[in-house]
Length: 303
Image (cartoon, rainbow, N blue to C red; front, side, top):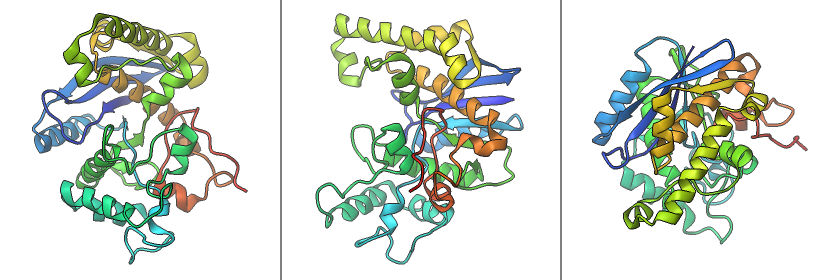
């Protein structure tokens, strides 16, 4: 089975490309064989990524961005779209946002926050709460909202099967990955990525510490604890492991972790792709908000 893991960005460029880990899953072994990088400019990089993912038949790809916003944006006072009531299907909601320009999308989210009281401006999905992830409305620092905007447009344009929000007969199924969840659960909280300012300063001690953290994460990825938790043995090709270790941005490593989470979901495709059942999550909410593919993302029981 072909498996891909994509470290995503809303604005692919030479300095921040799309990084795709290409893997094969067979007999309980996930072999991460190669890396494919798409540098941009933006639209060209997205089209090249889509062509790559759709080129080889049936496949699953893990993307590291939120696939939706919280249902809360459609309920209560000052909803994002007053003419769209809950429960709502994901596709028309996502398409309406994807059709906006980057600037108009950001302005819409800012306008949504403006009249709301502190503490009720940016909402988390149920999966974000379970994974201790940030709000998918975040526009700055780690701009996951912008990633959702670009990613939803990509999914809709190419007809991807999106689990669980948009089921189609496309040979490529997209699942939501979150590499930070693996890192936190399996390798601790030590920083492993260097931001642009850190790389420019090139200070040896933080760089060494992050390098050591990436080494620990890679050891965990290929070690017995990962197999016990995910039910898979992961093997990285030497060139992939070396690149994941030396890439100070952490993007290469994240793409490999996304591939693992995608493979874990594929192994559970007959059980809802590893997502919570109706006894834990309202099916309408799951179909709108989506879920993160990881065994540590556990929903609380419904009241």
